[in-house]
View 1: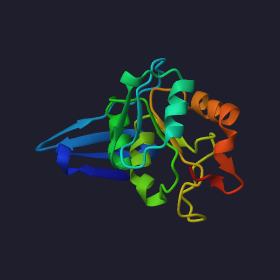
View 2 (view 1 turned 60 degrees about the vertical axis):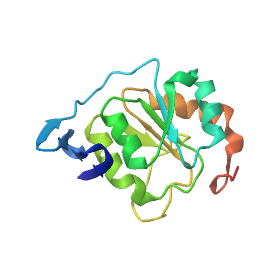
View 3 (view 1 turned 120 degrees about the vertical axis):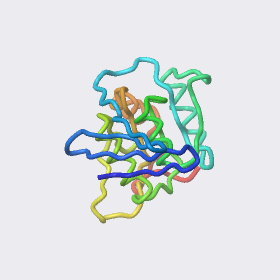
Length: 169
């Protein structure tokens, strides 16, 4: 189970990925989050406000996402919550430094809503304790074909990576 509290927004999201069941609690009201399986052709992209990487601008251009469909936000939990609530379809993080504890609960909720996440090149994300950060960045997506974004990263942006993962900018 994953739970993300967003006190500034007055909401808490929760998700049970094995049951594909998710919801939100707002004040004294609660409501389910819709599970989606279709894919958007014109995604809205979220990137980090505090750790914005110019690489993500290059990815947005490669995906033909115009400026007006790109936004920056703080907190991995909030960005994933925006995906879950249908306010965006793709979240890309390419500056390194994203820790496992930043993603555990948000990704449980995302998967319960029918979304998923991988590293920037499409590799599975590991939360098994073998490492403590996502060395290859993050692509989180809902109502969007994340394979398309990962394919572009592999095809066009291989120089972002070395044997250890994302290189420093």
